[in-house]
Length: 365
Ligand code: ADP
Image 1 (tube, rainbow, N blue to C red):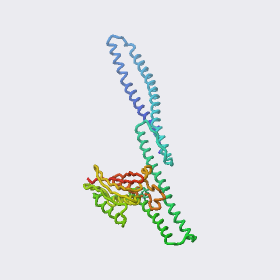
Image 2 (cartoon, helix red, strand yellow; image 1 turned 30 degrees about the horizontal axis):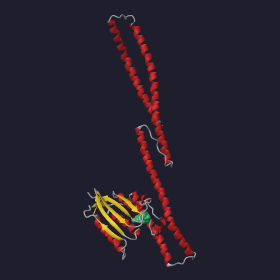
Image 3 (cartoon, helix red, strand yellow; image 1 turned 135 degrees about the horizontal axis):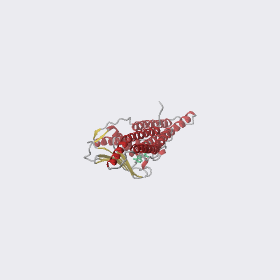
């Protein structure tokens, strides 16, 4: 079946409408006008005007004049309406053609291709929807590229270290001491942690990590987690872990395991970046939000770095934290976990004074 282009279809449909209108007009006029004319003549005769002998001639001339008038009207009408129809069809087709070109460019890999605005509201809306979808796809593509490049960068360092050690051991330039093996083990553990964290983040981002939300009391969870951290501190009292929990704290709707994971992450960070002073876990509630803050008196984060702390792989000092085993994924996971549970996480910090990570989760209704 041959496909007729939209422009031709529109044009033909206009022509059909026009032809029907003209035929109807001409038909009705052809039938009714002579009758009205005869009535007019009879009225004239009634008033005493003598047209008896010329009646036939008058009627004939009228029919002739009517036919000529009709031919000119049809010619003028068809050409004017045809021209307007052509212009209108083109006006509708032009933005559609531009839209098609943009989508083809986009499909061919030009991620910046966008549909220009149109003065026809429906087409403008369609173009706007396409542009929004294109921007989202462009962002996803950018994230994919960033992930691949970040990932190769993160994997390269431990792999280079491992390779260096193994080559030195093979060439017997390095003694095969327990320290050397311990270093090798540390690097492989780091790689393993990186892969595990990444897998978790990827599951979170693609929505494969199930979140089982239920009403839970936050205070007992905080007591339990902070006690575990205090136990791990052994003899050391520094930094001191304090809990300041609101007495009338409402229950929240959240996944207990995931909430614990967020708290553990924030507390581990606070401990890692605080040598002296205190780490305080504080809770309060505001409208239907239950807040939890982990505040430390540690090294803090520079103002310029704050917008990046929740980005994956981001670390304030890449080399220093890599040595301490940080992957820069922990906070990205926290953010996703909080958001998946309907909440929000934020950070405030002063370099050399401390950081405060706070998040809220919805109150149980
Ligand atoms: P990491 O595994 O490196 O700790 P995170 O995503 O948990 O990864 O943290 C990202 C970076 O944010 C850390 O490397 C560190 O530079 C900074 N950071 C996180 N928490 C704190 C904190 N409490 N005090 C100072 N810096 C912090």
